[in-house]
Length: 175
Image (tube, rainbow, N blue to C red; front, side, top):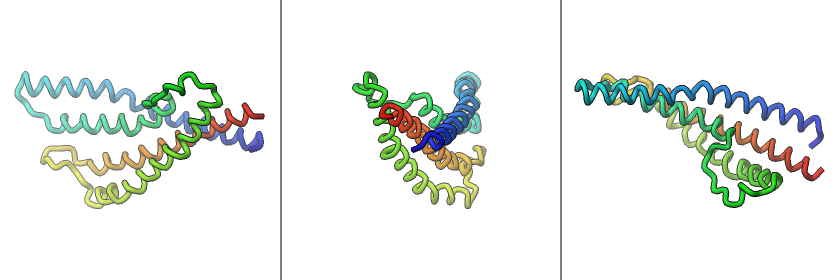
């Protein structure tokens, strides 16, 4: 790959990084809100004897948003679990090979599979505007299920950005 093409690819990778950084920063506050809502639910239930179904369901929504939209950001920060017995001490070029092959042969194909499999599941939910099974629950399960393909897309994009960087590292070390 020539230098100009590599610069364009790296620019695209930087754009993806910025997108996932923005999403990560905007969803991170949900962790604090989740703790506060959980505290309120426990307080209402065990101190005042009041059930708050919408608040209880909101915890699922917040956790789902935090997890699904934060996955790309976590990958960007290298925060996903990895068995790094060898990776931790490996040379940058060896790490680049692992990152490149891992993205191309594991991460991206699994995310594409998630996109394919989730499509009918999400479409069926949207077709009926699926809501909570509880009468006083949150009527937006179809929105929650829409996070599944978005999760896969954000991971595919970040995996591609990581693969571009790994490829750039490998071409620099050989050239």
